[in-house]
Length: 180
Image: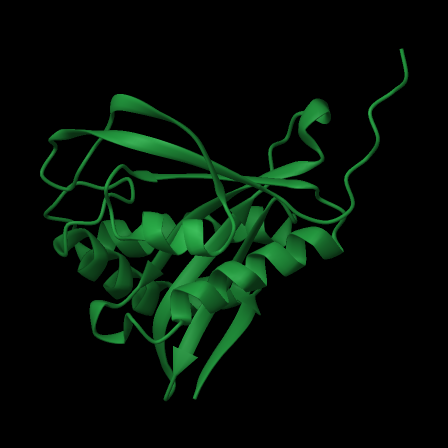
């Protein structure tokens, strides 16, 4: 049975080695999550540990999916620091181990982030993914709306520039627009 749990900053440090292994496996599998291959364990673990202070400060939330005591997936929610962006957040680093895909873990992680955002009073979530990636099917099925693509936006793990598609989803109560 897979469980989805939020992690605190200190817990993120505790899980950093397992999350590093997940990140490396994701990059080696060809997914564009911001890193180039080959990605070494020390760099991947350090990246996760560097997020701990942001998690503790409430600017970043991270959930993990655990199955049989092993981390099989993760997702993050990053809140902008700007005053005019307090209503939104970015979904980041949705990753599921290849062996665990196809069992609803990605959807469960996405739902956890969406629920948390709505409970916090956020009204808009955004994300981006490599155009044509399998993740696009998940986002569309989960009710996300495509809002455009940018050619050659980010490099894939081999460094080849690929198009990126952006999505958004309204969550929680939407504030009315001021009358004119």
